[in-house]
Structures are given as structure tokens and as C-alpha cells.
Length: 213
Length: 182
Image: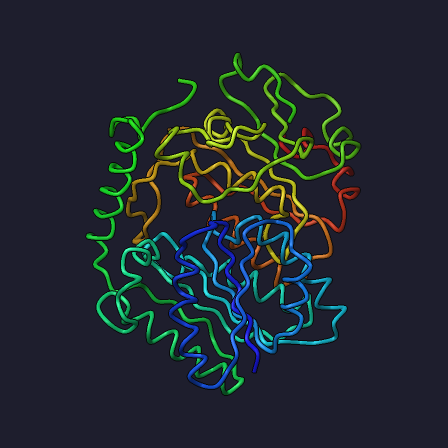
């Protein structure tokens, strides 16, 4: 089958969504599938991307959670794709992986529901979604082999997804978290923000700046 | 973006919407000084996930279009009304863009709240969030939308006051905001 791997992060270079798809692609290819990568970084959907997506049998989206939902540029892209796919007469099965900066993967629930609702509107078959918590860890562990250390839960979810794709089955949404202690995740995030602030010439207290007061 | 006396008014009623000008004028025939309306009347760049609003220019978006100070405007609000076309149970691209570009309102650090991880508050105002969705909305989309607004209220440290659905913007005009709010 031809499987469209759709990166829905607005980030042009490295992103957690890209990292997830890089882990997933070999799992699909070892089952004999052909993967086609698409990067939807902007609200405008390029005609060649729309055409390529229309040709896929399965679509797998990976995107970040933004304010409890889909990033705004992805809402625009889904509106374009709704029309584009409806015209094609094809009905690929859709899976989605939403990664959260928060620790709990279940905070991606509403974004996954939106993806399911998009499938219904567009006449596509919804497979299921994965809500991945502690997604902030991904970029720092992307050289770790899938299944090792902090990627154990992710590996389990992605292997199950690859198997579901091959069997053409759907299921209930899966909510999981990177294998990283919650307290350490919170601490690492705070150290990261402080480092970034200092690198930008700010003091740590500037992170708490209140505008207009 | 209509911006009336933002400097002088301490507590605002904020409206974020994606309506055509005619609709918003009929909904708000008289706009008091403390009413701020954020409209899709200027080009808006989408959030690129750079977190510059937390670590470069804390409290303000680094993209300096006309929507770069939304976090500060949220901080001055006590009533927030969102009017949006319902897209798959979420907000329309413009309204979602405004929300995505507003994350400077909260602090990058995490706290635990009801056993979940959320962002710490940057400001101390408590706003009441009302959302009016319009469009042809399925029951499943309406359920998603209600859950989404509840989740937004938790993450913004606000109170989710009301979520309503209208077939089209015209039906909203049957009762103006002043009548509903009082």
C-alpha cells in the first residue's frame, strides 16, 4: 500500500512530529509498504502535496497539540483537503499521532476527535489516533533506537499502529507517554526555558514578565 | 483589529471573531470603550512554534503583525467571547490562529492542576469564556467543541461560562450580546 506520512508541524526543520514519522517509516516499509512524506508547514496546501495525498491508500498524520487542538495552519490544510479528497472519490484510512508538550497523552483527546470528525466530513475511514505525552523529550532522544530507554511506550504504540495499518483495522484511540519521569520532565523543561532565555540575553526573572503592568 | 482605548481601560470585554463586518456591527451596534474586538481585518501569520513569546520577548509574540500582543490583551480581559465557525469541532483557522498566537498569556513553566500538567499563569486575571460556534455542526462535533472549550478554560485558568451553537451568524443576531450578557 502507498502510505502518506503527513508532518503537520509548522516547524520547518526539526520537530517532534518529524521525529515520530522517522521512527514509524521503517516499521511500515519492513511490511512492504511504500511511504510518501508530506510536510504541511503552512496554511496553504501545495497542489503537488494535494495530488500526492490523493494518491495514498492510508494517511498517517503526526502533529503537535496547540492550545488543546490542531495548529491553525492544519485546520486550513484540512479544509483544503476535505474538498480535494472529496473530488478524488478515494477514501483512504486515516490515523493520527498528536504529541503534547504536557506529560499526559490524553490531553490530545480533543485534537484526535477533530481528526476523526474531519474524516467523517470528508468521507474517509478513521482508523484511530495516538495521543503522546511528554513530546518535548523526543528531539533530545531522536538518536536513541526505537524501543530503547525513553522510547519504549512510543515503540509499542508505533508497532501496534504499523500492524493495524497492515491489517487495515481501526480501533480505540491510544494514549501514552514517553518513558521519562514526570518530575524530571518538568525540571528538564524549566532548565531548557532558562537556558534559552539566557541565550537570548535575558535574565531568568524575565520569563515571568507581565506586559502592560 | 478594532482597538479602542486599550491603554486607558483596565478591564476589558474581549471579542474574538471570524465574522464579516456586517455581522459584527449588527451584534454590537454600540461598542463601549471597554469592548475590544479582534477581527480578521488584517493579514495574520500563523504560529510557527518558536516559543519566542516565552524566551525571546516574554509576553509578546516575535511576529510583529497586528496580532503580536494578544497575550497582553487577554490579561486585561474579564469577559472573553469567541465567535467562530465550527470546523470539525474546533475553531476556524483565523480564530485558532489568534489563540495559537496568544500563548504568551501563560508562563512556560509547568504546574500540576487536578493531577494534570498545565502551564503556570503569567497574569492573575480571571476571565469568563463564552463561545458561540456557527455552521452546520454534527452532534459529535458539538461534543468535541464543548470538551475543547472546557480544556481551553483549564489551560488558560479561566471559567468556561457558555458554549452555544447557531446554524449561521444571522441566527446570532436575534439577540445581541448586551441582552445575553445581562
